[in-house]
Length: 257
Length: 251
Image 1: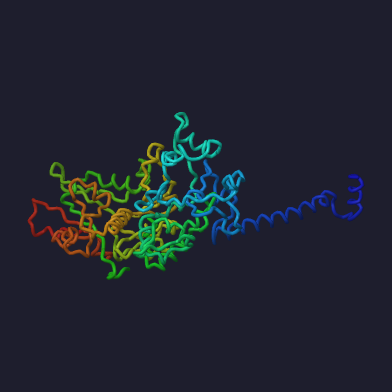
Image 2 (image 1 turned 90 degrees about the vertical axis):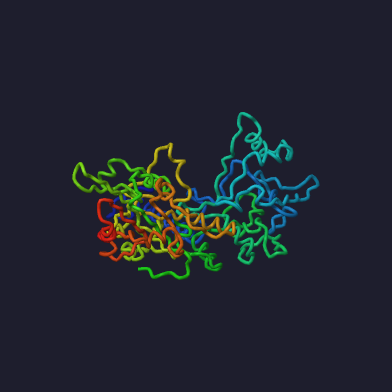
């Protein structure tokens, strides 16, 4: 079979050397592959320029956390169903979040500032210590849940006690100084500037909103995320557009110092 | 070139009383740790590539044994007519509305034109990636960018402290008082030789020192840079009083 193929090649075009005849299809395929790679890199750069980069090369907008903490069940309000499909949420093992009779669970509707305490006072929103998780999960939650077992290892057992190393999802570059406190302060008293409003958005009688209604502007609907994803690209253009619209300072020294 | 900004309530400035300066270098050290400046080794000094946003220059006067030492802390003069600003091709250095000359690190491409233009030699280029020993890595100030290799850096008048204090004043609905804001060098000065404040407030300490008869600015008469750092000339008790002012002008 192979010898026949070689003989066929030899007789086909006598002036061209045989080794080149064999190489030509590989070269053609190589060119195709080269163009495919270039197209892929161009696509990556374009997406990275205009929004969140494609989730390759370690650019992952939703990294796996050491414990799959569901914001849906903690911060969600009302029946826990995906707004688009109307079906209950699924946890990372594929089990639907339903009770014994098959109905979707009800969200706890916890305030964001219960865990992210320093968001109204400091630069960083802050991640709670394990003790805060344990204060509820000492009692609440079944022993069969794998994620809760992991949490109790972090918080309760003497041997493995220690902080949870959460992976950061929303991260600013090193040359940007973002401070949460003034943004929360402004947006709570000026609810018009809030974007991506949540379904239970409510303006209080004195014209302000609660601090937990503000987060959606930059972080998206965290309460509807089983695994936290960065929805907004959070590029400088977005910051400047909002600062212009609200007559905030747009000098470089505002954020870059 | 910057014209007077009428909108802003603030025009920051600093006054340095050379008569009080003992040359202790506390300001240099404070600046170094506040602003994440990499550690200067002996080799860096020998190559004239050490980074010091504020430095204390020493001058000897007279012959031994009648010697007098004179110290002048020199930092970025935040000139209103700054020679470093128009030469930057990417607008990485510019004037804020509050009269500060600031460097935008993420815009800088490292042409070093600004350092060549600066007559006070207070702009520094990062020739190397900054390095700290492992034990010092957690001591870095989170409010200040760590400058990487290939970009220019300079004194910012501790803009992170200015912004933090103004933000906290807004948060607590308070008015900023004179002396609320102080850069790291001013905080560290044991003899209060350095004073920071708002020049638009006539009663502020820095305005009063600026209008003092001993006050002079560096190289201003020759270069017309109109700096915002004011030096109060050293009082020499051996000389007659009338010469103080002239001596000041002379620098």
